[in-house]
Image 1 (tube, rainbow, N blue to C red):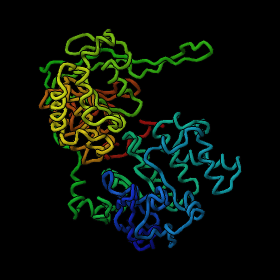
Image 2: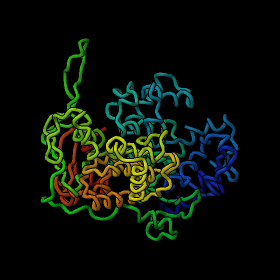
Image 3: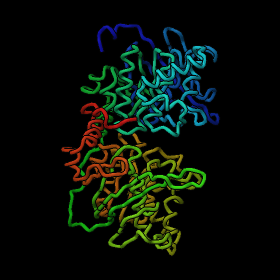
Image 4: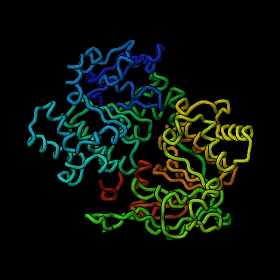
Length: 548
């Protein structure tokens, strides 16, 4: 950042801001007297783990918190010298979308599922600019072009569910930029995206910011993004800013213990050494999952979506096979097919036993040995069941003869093995953090003493430090029990720490496969090199590899 930028008056000035939430008569302080400035043309990053107060602070700028449950015991938020906290509803509506816009973390839940793209973007232009239909449509097409949507005319009538994750996020950016705001607030805008799409979105935001002289408040827990993207950084924990300053200064010479903790939080350690003498636990040959495309009055099959198209897989005892690729590449479909959760063709063997032709009833005894840990621990755990009931449910099905006391003992042991206090087993999922819920999901799988575990993006919803803890836990459990893992992820840093063999997928096919060292250090294909470049921020992803 230039010296000239540093001397400018702040565009946004947050002074001594506190945010409190009142529930059942009890007040909880979520943000505790924080102060920071954002100047025109600069990017300020708010960094911290879940619950640190980042998003609550950002939402306060546009008064988007659930008032009157939320309140501000102290502070001011000055935008061009005007205190937004004192603005009434009419005044703040003029600020939203005009002076300040916001991009949210999950575009699918932020876009209206009932309206096409054109209507959602045009609505902003009609409300704030008073544009008519023709003028608004021209501006919508211009915005879609600017954010890199290919064939924008074809996308005007598309609904959010018809777009990819990257396309939806680009539409959100187009909406945010519609009225050329002075300040853009981006709340974890790339967390839900694949690494290559993430790189494209960050490059797009950087380019748009440069062209429009726009300031940005960027909220994230990914320090790799901050180092490449921001000018200054504010580190938050427990509702307080514990350190702030220029990015280079904070990264090269962190003063606060929490900042040093975040910088050291990347997944570490080595995957198990490849050993071809280990017995094969799961083997699949020429596996295919084709979904028919039916059209016409008689619903005739006119084509197929080849989600998995002729893939071979081998997973050995005590080894980890990583499956990587972008959303829609067929990673999860492949895993579900191997577990016989969906129909497929080809050969599948488990512990040397052919299972492709097994009926549901014949598969049931094998389920205790073949377990899954899902991506979203909150969605995977029943909110109506206690942790003891969730973990013990599988024991009731597969070990019906054991007593309630023995089942409770096994549940307690499983919780302790994943690093949780067994005394918490009578609580419910909402009483735990995201990392703790994922440990509960792992305990539910491990209590049955399986031989093979499919891990479907088990760390993508977690903070960096919690990711590192879960990776260490999975490695320890594998070593203790000789587990075979099928690890599905688009986070290549996590895959590198866990997998000794890697398969790279794209559009249902294997692009490249081999040892972890070969895939990460000497990738043979352009697509794999693009994934690596995007994941490790070594360079921009090569053009033309991933389109939207």
